[in-house]
Each structure stands twice: as structure tokens, then as C-alpha cells.
Length: 121
Picture 1 (cartoon, rainbow, N blue to C red):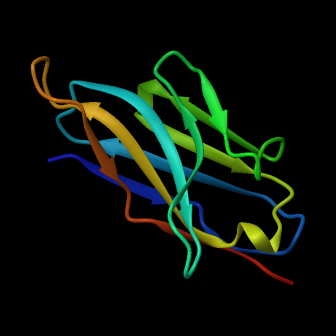
Picture 2 (cartoon, helix red, strand yellow; picture 1 turned 135 degrees about the vertical axis):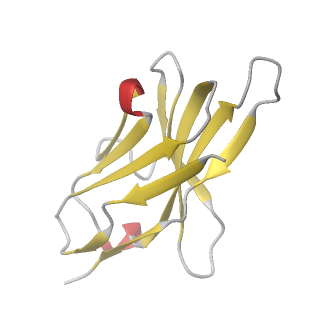
């Protein structure tokens, strides 16, 4: 019923920038936290950034000062602005949104399909 569509990934040179977006659609009662994760080959999936319903943000130490997470509630969209990208940022990036399908339904977490970010010269 609910789908998350990601976009914005690609190949950039070190020092470049990318802006990822993730839009949720379907029968959604409310959206709570929105998160970005990333997973490099052979590694676990790690939390990169999160933003709560009240606008509170949190970042992994490795991206602090370079990445910015934001949300557009009217569009049910979360963004990740990535600046000063380095090869170590290369990974598949996944959005994850906590939401409710109804007023008496459990809070669930949906995942996007992932988008590849490659930083290389």
C-alpha cells in the first residue's frame, strides 16, 4: 500500500555534491521519523542521519558537517544533501520512514529501494 521511491544517486568526483530524495506515497495516516542509512559492500547497514517529526536531527560522526537532512511534510519527502563527498562515502543509500497507516495501527518502518552513490576520480 505504501511505497518509498528514492532518487538522486550517481557518480561524482571527490569534493562533489549530491542531493538524495525519498518520497512516500499511499494511504498514510501519519509520518514520524525519517532516516537515511547506507551500506557499503561487505559492511553492515549504518544510520547516516535522522530527522524527527519535530525537526530534531541527528548525524553519524563520519558525515557531520558535510551532510544535511531535511523534510518537506507537504510532499511526504525527506532529503539528504551531501557535500564534500569522499570515496569513503561510496555506498548504497536507503531511506527509512516510520509511519502509521491508521490512528490505531502500529508504528511501522518502510524502506526505499536504495540508490547507489559512488565517489571516485
